[in-house]
Amino acid sequence: MKTETLKTKSPDYVRISLAAAMMLDLKGGLFHRNALSPCINVLLTYDSGCAGSCAYCGLSLNRKGSYKEKSFIRVKWDPYLLSDIIERIKARPGQVKRICISMITHQKACKDTITIAGEIRKSLDIPLSVLLSPSVTRKKHLDELKRAGVQMAGIAVDCAREDIFEEIRGKGVGGPHRWERYWECFHEALEIFGKGNVGIHLIVGLGESEREMVALMEKIHSSGGSTHLFSFFPEGNSRLSGHPRPSLGHYRRIQLARYLIDENMAGEFAFNPPGKLTSFGLDSERLEKVIASGLPFMTSGCPNSGAADCNRPYSDSMPGEAIRNFPFLPEPGDIAAIREELGTP
Image (tube, rainbow, N blue to C red):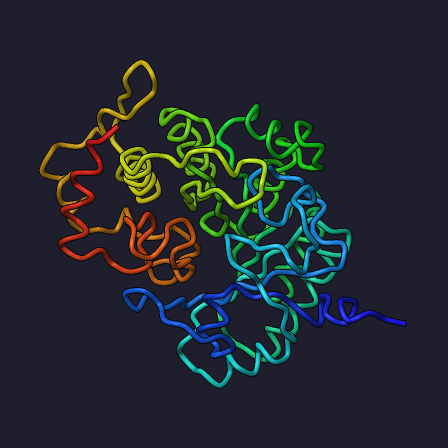
């Protein structure tokens, strides 16, 4: 006899973020400063959960609790019928700008993601992205995803150094992920989806220096990819639940560097001996103009006409505290605070 959990698995069911559920009127609530989420993020779901053991992730196999009970980015992702989600999006023309299918590390993830992409594309003419799990994804799957209607791919490398990756995502935690495979998948995705259509997720504050993060972002850009930045925010009961968040100054400098790199505006970066950014290589007038625009400090994600559709409202900061990734254009008061934060340690 099937259990209730077995009835709510992919590809028929997917989990969606709290922000997505609010956008589709499946959950009540208010968006702080009206930071609506135009991207509907859907997450694959299985009884056995994710095979990954990443030390910072709410879905980690090593984190206590059943997969159904585990939070992800500190909120619960409830399961819904994919067909119901599609119908709710159709009933809100123009409100949803992008859909992103997020894999977990599971033997059925590639096959089911291809199925889900095909079902979405049958009913909706909306840009479609997929967040890949390289440990179970092969080049043939990328080709099938593109044929199913996926236009952009993301890969959550997260760590800026191989040793950090192996310690908190790979052998150090008994996980299946390997640094080399993630970068192989990046180059395969560039070949299939094309330059400008593959993004690498990086988390700032996992032990890397600013110099190391900038060097990796430059490498990603020169290869034809872009960087989607996150500021580390500990997940309760994870192995890194006690790990400190990066300072606002640290994160703001990396945000500014990322923007200059991905927008082909970067000068010659300079660093002090510990690896802190001390110069962005632009004259003061030009740098001030970039800062005043507010654009470097907005969420970096899959774009649509310049701005990121995936604005991840408050994914790495709580409403009421300093916003790390602005899900909207920063206002003058925000810019004034950012100027001060850029110069802090």
